[in-house]
Image (cartoon, rainbow, N blue to C red; front, side):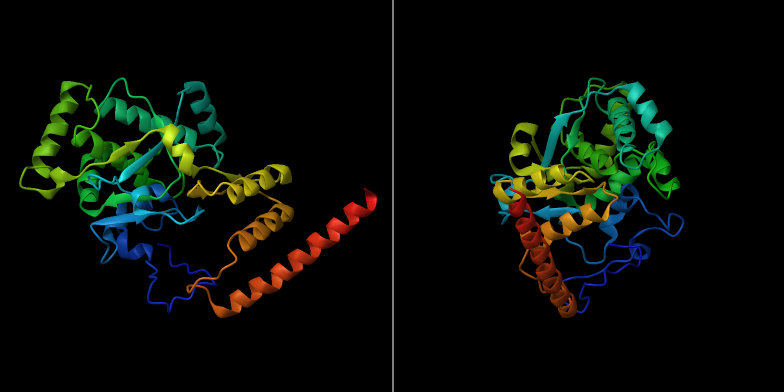
Length: 316
């Protein structure tokens, strides 16, 4: 799903992949948009998408073969939601995030506003556990009810074309609405919002609706950390190689991501070498000329590494 962008290496003639333009799924008054919080709200509009689908960001990678049991509970076949560590909300930090408006840290402010919305609607004692950077299983039919329930909050999301610290984490709100609607979590909010949720349940979760069967299995941090990991590429070579080696040697980690926090060609070189050597087998989705280009650069990388090795040995 892109804003009319197709990677040069991607073979769009392959029948097993389809590129979706934002204009096909996002209303005209919202386009153009460059923020995933907005884009995620309209994934259900993808033509022909299944009732249950798996969604990944573009910086996620699989580290091993993945069984369906990773995505779904074995007994009920409910999708799994992976949570990580608890977020300790510090209003002073949030104010600094907003003031600095750094793209890599404004997420901390978005967490705060998400936390406040959940406290208001569902639970005054809510504890925020971070959403793991994993593959997300979604119900197509729940997106429209979600947009209706949070229509006032989503106005803030849709009004900013880029990332903004005041935006809530929309995917998190989507998941929490599912959990509270199906009474998977203890409800402790004001009567006003309890009535709002009851009206929502009566409208969208009636006994005659299949949506009454929708739910999730919530996976806690102690289990999530065994299979999912958050990572970043930066300008520190030592940190990068520690992360690369970790994934190479720990195949129990099934899915991970790499945030791009680097600014140097050296870091890009390190990352390129890791990706080419970690995933040496080419897929059917890559154009042949890019496959050959990758082989050419792999040879050059190996030559540089051998040269550096010889230089180091000569000084030892």
